[in-house]
Image 1 (cartoon, rainbow, N blue to C red):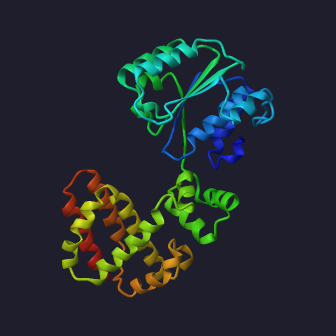
Image 2 (cartoon, rainbow, N blue to C red):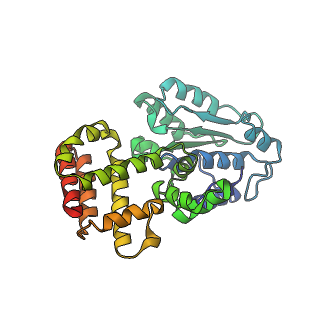
Image 3 (cartoon, one colour):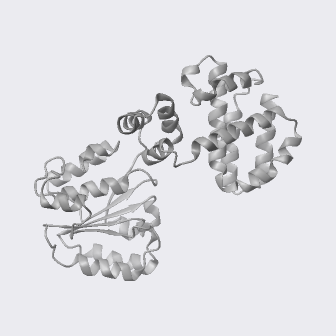
Length: 326
């Protein structure tokens, strides 16, 4: 593996490489960021770098350590909680027992704990004892989407590395280079992934379902603006059944409304859903030019998160859409 195989996170990669070359590696790291940001992949490359016999700015991929890591068979690299389920005290006891043993082959041992926030209270308190007297030959990497879910005393004893959203241009370049996707699909994946690379990869591979969901929501939007207010009551069951997906539904509607606004202002190049541009032009003719609709949509999303009456929030949102497009 190479650092260049991981898109984005350039500052993090540079910092980790520098820490190895300057012999300033921390005993414990927290890799924090949303799922799909590449935390585990970068943790693996970092682990390989620590165990590589010929490391400079990348693992050599030729020494015995690199060969074993690439085959998933290195005795000094341990991954805990692969399923990202609850981590019990017994698992931490086993980890601690291993931590205080000498490495089998390398100068160091590396432990990657996935879903570290899933530690039970007992497990977390037991793990804390390891951080209070960390062995010099072990490096532990905790992976989590939110460091605030870890004990503050654990966080204070670790170096927190925050993963940032990958830029759209970086995602586009990565997809075109590694998957040969068309410009249209690349643009859609970059927009709908919200800066999360693995989500973009899933979109182009058809594993995410977002593009089919997009088609469903645009068709639903067409239905909303083409019917009278009675349609709001007819759609109540749809929105109730899709309550768990309301964030993505509102997000897709917001993107569509932006596209219609772009078309209205002759900014076709900025349209995200370019394969639906003819429909967007039809919707422009129905639009009354209310530029507050995006803010209203965002307000609906915020209100739902604040546990306001779900049905009332949705009904009001649909009425506002109809006011603008009828």
